[in-house]
Length: 261
Image (tube, rainbow, N blue to C red; front, side):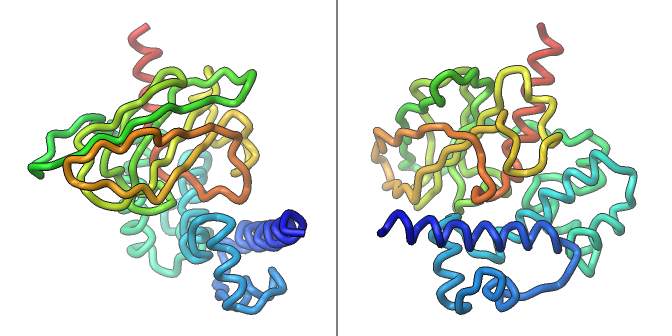
């Protein structure tokens, strides 16, 4: 019975996510989303959070920015027009949130062709007692994983710069050092070998070249080593929150590797 109920809830959340995609340029409320799911507002919010790991509002905001990224690279629409297409009434608010979540302004993102400046993979911490998070990351059977990005983020959606991150060129053991004390979400993103530069061609949640994994919240105490934080990559689905930062960085690394070879 539990599996059946969970499937019903996931389908209801999926309907709402489809509704979000179909109405990105419109202004709608949590009540509208709850009616689409055919739940009360209170029950809907709890169900959505349980299935996706984030609130409906945060998920919607991430979808809007994800579509904005695509429009910036794939069309010649003005930034103002794009902001309206993805549901922002103020281009200033749109630009500010885009920069905060993606790392660069919309204009810079377009100029760079969907790439982003490198993220420092190792940082010296000013805190006297930092920690290490380590474990192993596994790939789906029969897959050919390429570059793997692992980052520690304050929330389930990987937006803004990670508190710490690392890159792997193959599945296996990983170590993230100089991690400050706190509660973090460990998120991993991997693109199939040779598909790094084709990101964004398929509709969101349907690109089987993109694999994701998550674990959290992970509590890190000062000076402690957090071990056996293992992750298993799987194809991204429509219930997974959009990836706002890691994928452009993977593309940047892939381009740099290609230029050096």
